[in-house]
Amino acid sequence: MTARLISIETRRLVTRGRFWIMVGLTAAVGVFNLLDEESLRFGGSFAIAGGLGFQGMAPLVAGVVSAGALAEDRSRGFPALLMSRGLSRGRYLAGKAVAMALAAGAASLVACVLILAAGALLLPGGEIAGERPPGPIPSLFAAQPLLNDLVAIGFLVLGTAGLATSGVLVGAVLPNEYVAAGVPFVITIALLFLLSGSATLLSPFTYLELGREYVTVLPESLLPVGGVIYWVCFALVTVAAGIVAAKWRELQ
Amino acid sequence: MSFTGPVVTLDGVGKRYGRHWALRGVDLSLSPGEVLGFIGPNGAGKTTLIRLLAGLVRRSEGEVEVLGSRIGDRGLTPDGIGLVPESPQFIPYLSARRNLEFLAAIRAVARSAQLTTVLERVGLDPKDRRPTRKFSLGMRQRLGLAQALMERPRLLLLDEPTNGLDPAGIVELREIIREVAGDGTAVFMASHLLTEVEQVCDRVILVRGGSILKEVRRSEEPTDKTVRVVVSRDADLDALEDWARRRGVRLAREGPDHDASRVRLVAVPASTPELIRELVREGVDIEEVAAVRRSLEQEFMDLVS
Image (cartoon, rainbow over all chains, first blue to last red; front, side):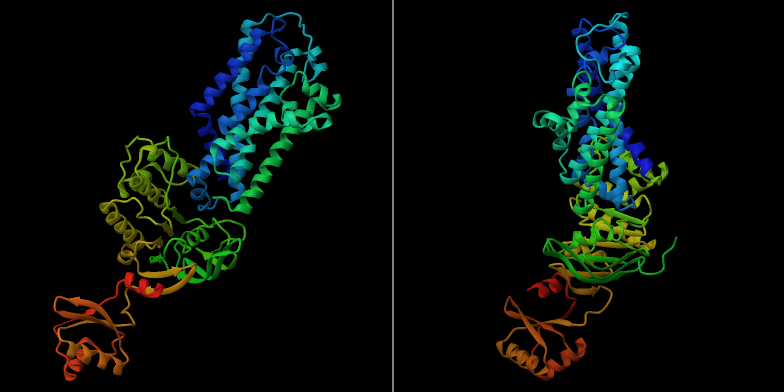
């Protein structure tokens, strides 16, 4: 039943109008940033432009597309209809978390593909020039800039998906869709200002601003996997905390 | 799978929220095809009991067994429970049918034809494409009933099912409950509407402050037989009171009816003809006499007052 819940809920989230609105907005911001940077080339555009505005858009995409989905269900009393039919609280929340992450990640991925397509049409090929440290993996950027861009896209998609799972914890505590939708953006911005020094390793912003923050905060050996480790841990912690909170509060 | 034993067994069940006991010491059982009403004022613990039976909250003490499975240890509920929450809400931008399809798809139950049948059964148009956000409370209540019935439950839990229903809807709901019970489904209905419950339930549990006050079987003759007697003269009323005192019969005045006094005799130790003979022998001139079946409302008010 959990697999069906994931499949049906993901389909529901990606067919809502807000999914496509956020895809369009994110792609538009990305393309605007592409045109703003004269030094960009098709391969390496994501790396040099630091994710083309994703550090701001990813938390918004996560929030609007899916982070509020659990709180929205709770405010309608929907979980009770499923849990009274034999779906445990833990499996319901886990299924919901996967669906929320998949939908948010898909929105981010589609936006990135649109930006890449726009980059292929609008940007010149040839040598890459840029003053900023190119992330997320400078050595890969030097050898295969397009592949480096694809790694960056992977990190951004993971980041958007990971941020969406914060909705499981918030939704388990508070059945308010708007609060749950706002939390990814609030925690990203709040931790950017609150954390400093080595503590910035814990900041979501570090793993979204791939052109500058990521390469300066993480040790070089961790650059190829740092984003994956951070977002997987982020999702696991928020979902586990959400499940514990839901069981303790007897979420319905 | 047919179920022959009790569908629900509660043994000393209690549920505590912080220091407040929402339910305490509840013992009851429910058999297949039986309709059980759970009546009490707001805050009596009705919704808590429904949530316990649906596996949505854990018991704080006692044992809960539903459809042969112990509920509450691992938070799992068995198949075969249909729940109609107090104010059912659905995905607001989907139609009634699409909402049912969504729920049915997650459970991989109920084919399209079944959904059509169940929507028609609760009085909703299966072809209605309006989103449920445009539904009235009564229509949402009907849809709530449809989602509970679509899997042919063996236990139907109804929490204030008449909320928002118009009079025709209430009559239809009564018919549906009787039909469902006739097919062997046990029905548990929590309500504060005494007359509704009285008309449809085989057995009624009166509850207050989380504890059961009394259980009433509607098919049984009441243990306390009540007879209403009307007399017109003060002397007859005195004679009646005198007789009641000697016979240990509780007597309640109901107020004057035109020129006559109406009194209610409770726990009468004889049949109505014998009572009439006795009162005549006592010299009471009777204007009117009638055996009275006490309403659930009277029983409840007697208990709580």
